[in-house]
Length: 446
Image (tube, rainbow, N blue to C red; front, side, top):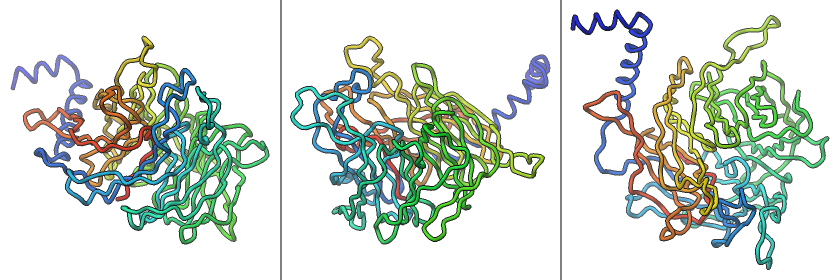
């Protein structure tokens, strides 16, 4: 013990403090992950995902859509059955993998799913259809999930053209869609009232400070207050607003300053306590992306308005499209495309994708990158934690192994090592559920 103390003194006070904090964090992290056996403990009501059957992953790069595999679909996986009986029930619903993995939303009560198509279906009869042959999307479908074994389409409308994301507000009374308006005088945010399974009373609110042509990759509602944040992919900023909805009119009022984040913010999520917004950034190209935690109302400006600011940042893998947070707000996972979308005969193809695991301190917003975990899969755009925070479902668009056609929902376990409290692992289990090729957006109904 004396020899250890002397060594620590030689290293210096700051390093000693770091070691103490690290060991404390590791012990706390490990204590949150009970050791499990081989049993499958994924908890929730059901998973809802959408698949784009119109294109293969490499169409992003070489433009060739490739062969179809069935039709675009919405998949429902009920989770109240033994793992050996889990399966996907599917219904047709036009959608597209182009854009953020935000093409499906489910009402807070789990009754209805809303699906947008960022691009329409491929042309019929063309021998070698190309990516640019896909028309702009506009169809919005509402699916009734009352009986998950027999989902029903109950509404189909022409919504805003070229949509990017869809989301319910916290009480399920509103549905928000961000899109790219062709008319530069129109708002890029469409708000519908949601009444008994129907989208009604469209509102196109003005967005204070919005510049025509900026792309809004999405938005996220505060967990307990009438506030939201918009993701501006063009300017790489998060903008904060309070909102009201009266007489079928949606109004936004700026709430504090916008915050600049890393290039191409793709997904965002509030922490459960509502004190931070966590956002991933894609960083186009082959460099690592990032995850940033933004603190809300960290300070107050001279005029009395709140000041938001970045409190922490950590690196993710290459092209981290998907983002999820555990229900207790302590774990963050990104799904990283890496180079898995390259054509198979391209030397750049790495033949793997990956997940990045980070720990988040819900009080300070401090992010700690735990590790990266590669796996055999193509274009994994979405990931969700289960109710326990110990398991993950990952949407895998396609597979390198030709013996495994189609997409899949793959299950991972977050676990520790009894003999090494500092060791945390994400482990891909053997449990996987086939779905239509092209799965890209997924949500969990808790």
